[in-house]
Length: 181
Image (tube, rainbow, N blue to C red; front, side, top):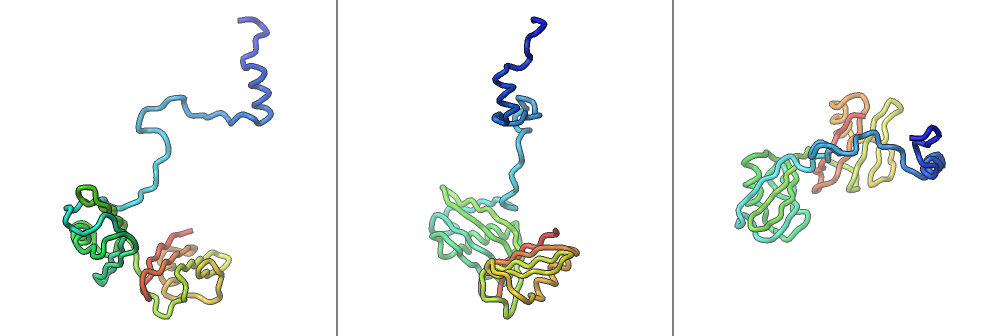
């Protein structure tokens, strides 16, 4: 190697200094299979199979309420009770399920929290947030005055700062997710 040889070609140096090249990736150029990349967030708490005759149709999304009622949200299955019976051998109500049939039924199940809010707002979506700066309430993405005591009580179990998102299931029943901030 010559005394005046550049380690990096001039065109690459100028492109890097001009911001035309992406920054260097500090990871090694190769990694063991199955150990690299970012893990995807889990989409379901359980995956359950059921026999082909558990329900009539090909696909369905439904919610199982604590009362035993099943709410079909979409799909071509009118009565998912056979699918719910298979799920409830492993998971208790309430839950949200997504099922499809390909020779047999495959059901992805996610546990949910259901809260009854009597005389709740007229919207379909509520977001209630408490931070040290105060509490904000939004119904269907429109900020509103007031509060919802049932949601505040649930949020106070999370901690001092929290956010609760609620989606109407049916009537006064709401699916909620409470998260600390």
